[in-house]
Image 1 (tube, rainbow, N blue to C red):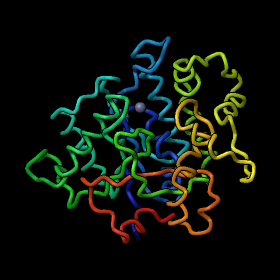
Image 2: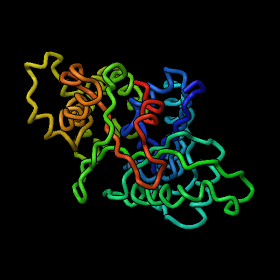
Image 3: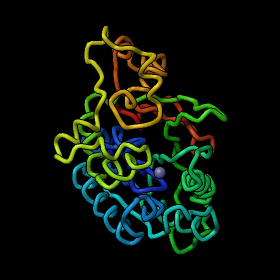
Length: 291
Ligand SMILES: [Zn+2]
């Protein structure tokens, strides 16, 4: 594409996009493309000690740190955490936000997910997708000329299983993806370890805890890698093993895309095409994923 690609990544919470497509976002931003993350709720639910308004304010600051580090914009809506509903008012709000940004490609969760906010954020994107081009809906913001390509983030849920349409190598940005996650201090070092009963394991020192976030680290020598162990790490603590799951699970797609090099890629992000977005033709795929 001669002009920059505009990628809008939509999550329910102020860290969903970071976890699910932070690597791709970094690759876009570094290649001069324009990335917006949107968190549809304020994140005010996710803490065991802080009150709703305190944690929401803290999480907004964390997203600002991510935006600065990654060279992207990061919007956080004021909808209360755990209360996202796929209603008409929110659909209109989303249609306006997407039209204003005018993305070439959008990313969101699949509609099958453990968290109601994730499910509803996905349904809202589906509900909004066709309406983006309908002129007499939200008439105050001009419609888009065409519906963007829409992709779903990888997840491990099985009803139905994830369909890996595109695998993107993120080895070159994996360390910085962990730096993005490291900005979400209230989550990766406090709330999430608390929910797993592992708060006592988190080091106090910032560099030590950043190392802990990676652990277990993946051996860079592929001969030492236990693939079965990687595939068991699809849930639970963030680690290099967990980040490696898509590459090992969908190795054939990496080989299909990258040839011989695809055989040894350790870290990748996987995406599934939504049939409610524009079709992802081969030509469009080359334009939208120049990596
Ligand atoms: Zn979430």
